[in-house]
Amino acid sequence: MQIIYPSDYFNLNRVDENYEDEFNCASDNGVKCVLLSSQHLLDSKIKLSGNLEAHAPVIWRGWMLKQKEYKTLYNTVKSHSAEMLVSPDDYASCHYITGWYGTCSDYTPETILLTENDDFEKITSRLKWPSYFVKDYVKSLTTSRGSIAKNAEEIQGVLAHIKQYRGEIEGGVVLRKVEDLKPETERRYFSFYGNVYSADDVIPAIVHEIAKHISSPFFSIDMVETASSNLRLIEIGDGQVSDIKEWDVQKFVKMIVKASVSG
Image 1 (tube, one colour):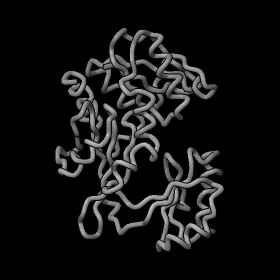
Image 2 (tube, rainbow, N blue to C red):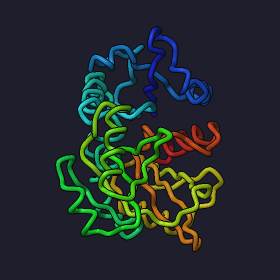
Image 3 (cartoon, rainbow, N blue to C red):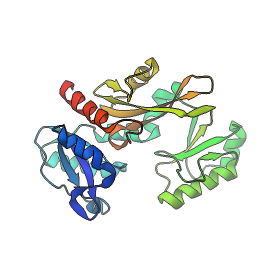
Image 4 (cartoon, rainbow, N blue to C red):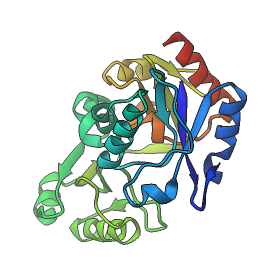
């Protein structure tokens, strides 16, 4: 397994500080690591700090890439006679809610997929949910405003904030029914080559069940408890762009090494 990390913006030979611990740990564990120029990526170009080993799988461990950016990275890696572990189709199927909601709808809050031009007054009048969790196809708002709305006007307000802070609504608009969840119980699991891993080695049966619905070789599964202690799926994410959250960095890297050998 080889890993591509983002570089420091001003220095192609230095890893971005947000990934420094993971980069050093992976290197110490014998994983070949290459840096991608953050400066060039902003111009939709791919420049790597070194060569990749031919015919060895590659993963990206960095920030979220748009589908077009990921495809460009995929093609660049292919030009080095190597291969991204995750195909562009598998990346999109986990990165965008449209790729996984249909097969996982029984495990996650009820969700409506819309466009910015839809009539939110008409939609909220029909749904009559007490409140709505508002996001785009990729992620939710992380500012102090939050993502909860109680009516059409507040939904428009959240969308305006998303555009203000992130520049665009990516893909489309998502309304999710707000359930009574316990945020402090949220946990992140990773599936790598068909095996599910957790930070504490405790993996509920429902997580294994959910993982069977996803075809990608590397993805994350976020779960949370309801007030009645049932487990609910928050989201599926591409494993390459998922934070390690509660995971110890050594444990995360060893998961990659172990999965690479067994895979």
